[in-house]
Length: 238
Image (cartoon, rainbow, N blue to C red; front, side):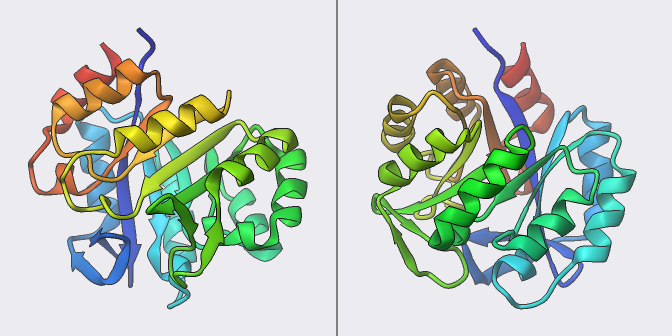
């Protein structure tokens, strides 16, 4: 069985690590210094982190300097996300040492630009697919983008290597991932899939690994102690 890459999430708002419910900024609960959280994940054996600038994602500000410093200092791999929707934001992201950069669902409003960026940087990019009731919905604005499977066809042709699939209704709810949705996405593409949203217990990680997913982003479950990160690492890699 292939490994399931575990990406503990660090969501940053106003310079602090926070956690969300159902992708809503007004639900954010403040945690602590992102640097402390990162160091803790590293000490416990994490190989990756999923680092999100929530202020950029929701157009309420930016944590650019902090994030650049965190990435530069990180001894483990970083997948960077949050508000990457246009040429300026993608160039800033590419200038960091982030191993992977996740383009936001909102960017698909200009899918021709996304296709162009994929073609020039496909090895380093992932595309975020934030889905609500089977429809792509831009995080932050809530704007409906369209049918995810039609967009996947276009993005696959452009050479997209990897998608981050988030079921917004399960994100931060600890009710388990949307396995049906993930299965449909897996069957629609040969690209790699990273799951996000709803993971609440080790058996969720086992299920996702057995499905053959490339990775999983875990946030709230780690922060509230529903999942022990050391046990999660064993479940995903051994």
